[in-house]
Length: 377
Image 1 (tube, rainbow, N blue to C red):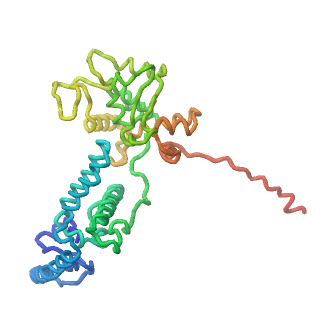
Image 2 (image 1 turned 90 degrees about the horizontal axis):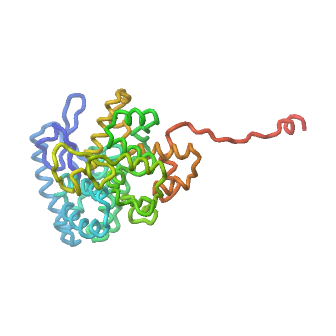
């Protein structure tokens, strides 16, 4: 059973009872907790609620009896998530950012679905829950998290092996275009021109080394050894290609040299805040935290005025500098393999994705069929 959509007309309704408006009239329907089938309950709210209470007392109790036989009684989604955290999440040793994203989705499921019995959730329930609550990329990410959760439920014996994974068979909705627009070189220059010194250093490091936000703001002077920067890409740190040794070129040397100022800091990208407060997760008072860094970049981006006509969700973020840089390397004649290694990608397809979208590419093809051989045989 999926939580009903958060609409005012659904407030005060019994579980499994839904309201819908048609030509100014509100109709009620009851969703069977086991089959997912809808049954009309008329237009009288009081009678529909009364009928739903009776149906819930019988049908949901029946579901508990099924759980007793299968040994899954009392196993609700909250209990499933708790077991998933212990058996799966803790064993994966995820990067902090990845763990944060997973936890965000799990907490959302706990809030929305936690009290529901695992056995009561079917394909229709998941489909309605996803469609009512998420859109586009958020839909895809939450659908994937639910699919993984129910794969785990099957391994625990909490969900019948003969039943389909209720999330996997829902519509994937991956066939939509990219919301966020690519950043072009003129936009990069405009943002860089008005940025404070520390942000300029961050932008320059990103476009030259093709590293992401996490790597840029966590880079320390001590990470340079024997004339090279030693960087580990957090997203793929479990893989051997994520551990990079980048020789310090004159260009990189200049960026690092200019980053040194009157503020003593172990971090290449740093700034002096108005107050020396050691925030949670901060190693040094000059360290930039990820969320604040992102917000600062967005503010600078919008101050240029170049994106006023673009919806906020489509405006390029700091991450797009990585894409712009990979495209500039390609334009400068560097091979796909060179850029792929620098970006710590496992295959060329991902690198090509980052390089795409900056300009229309034209493929040279040959059209050399002899017309004479056709017309004058």
